[in-house]
Length: 285
Image (cartoon, rainbow, N blue to C red; front, side, top):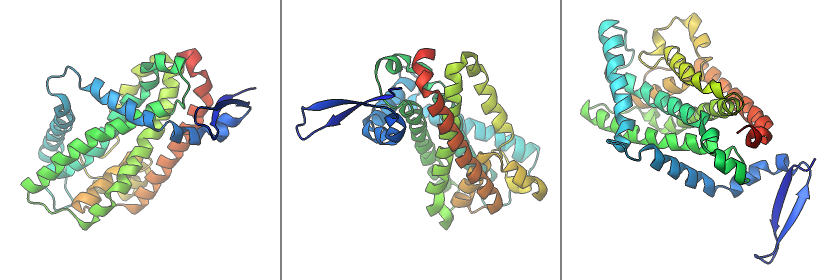
């Protein structure tokens, strides 16, 4: 079966040959991702403008949502439940450091899961690697993470708390959060194209994930026999890593290894399922 139409540029920039070869879509797929790299910028910038167009507070929503949730969690877990904080940082900072990666993950998952359906006209008319669309949605969520991170730095100044020297390892855990969100996003967006009613389940998945993720508390309060089981949730290692890098809170490295393995496994499953379903997207949409 002819799977791809490839345009190849010769010495003359205006001379383009049309080459049709079987199986080339798999071999050159990742090269095409790089070739269409400008689409990442175009789609990400468009998503940002659409998200905050005709809004009262605009980008401030990326600050208000995690801030309000942090206040609620601090009151419930810190004041009412009186859970312990193993670090030296205030409980509010501990919760906010966990809220940042979780807010990024939940936003990325919500945006990526519906990205293909939201770009139905583009998919049915133009050829490009479809993986660019959910990837740009996850990249857009990194902007919100960056804005919220500025607020975190202001909080550190307010509380006069000096970050740990582990801060230099923070990009690694941001990358791990991206891998986790991208893997889940690829799988869910492919399922969402095939089964449209699946979009009603995604908010429940995100809400359920919040309950099994140590956002409002520290995972160190959990019994050691349950820590590794909890780390099967890949966001556990990410959140613990954020708190270790910024606040110097002790970290369970076995849990981080398990969470990293789960993130990479989810990414491979997501890519495999997305590529398997990619040829049917135009028909199903």
